[in-house]
Image (cartoon, rainbow, N blue to C red; front, side):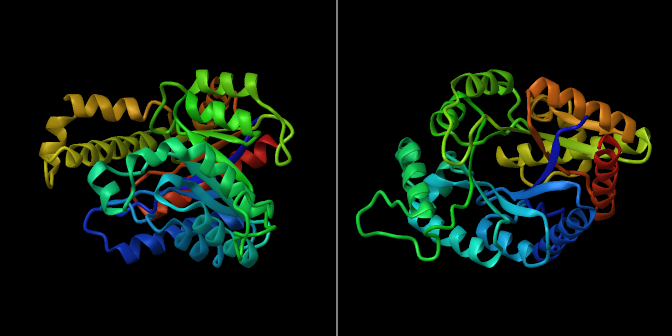
Length: 331
């Protein structure tokens, strides 16, 4: 039987696509996922200074999508807390919780979600990551009403108890989530290496808390599904090429045509892209069902959170319908 399934979105902007259209294309799958009723939550990831990602203003996008859906939980996967004041995040997500009761999640990461130059533009000191454990506690206090800062409260936010999740791709996040008794989400959709070790450490060291009585693991994977395996394989190749294009663009290759991308497929950039996509499940419904089951066992996960990276809105919606069919069959 499959574990719970959820969705992770970065509001990807296609080549030559207006950002307004990309944001509209984010709402359409969200509404379809909501209608299907087979997904627990939909999270948006905070990134900055990336032309192909439109989820930088994460709380704004969450509000936009929550207003256009009815059931599915909507949240951050995650907010990069070193970029923000804990009080401001408590106010933002407290507002969301008041607007959309019992539907808002707050996933937290300690990475900047960008490069060093952009961190400076965000007014972020690299050393702020060192205060992440303390900032999580401060944020938790604002949302519970038991503030750690005398006389300072989050309005809105106080008493909303928005559930927190620790995100990570290393042992640091696993240890923190275990010590604080919070759910742990591993970013294995792009950082596969420490998945099993981190989950093992988290489960071994977990301490119950008011929010959570026993360990809860969410593992991330990429899914490219289609009605037949040949189509899925073609889509997966496009996903890989898009990842190569993105990575090459970051190291100064500028705008790449298809021939240039092809030439890079067998380079170090191509190898890195393939490694990042290690946990990518590709195929027809039967293959995807088997792949999800195998990945859940590998990750020892209570829930899988899935990216839906296929190019084309129709293809992404069809992926959701296939996944929903698998959930229905498994239950």
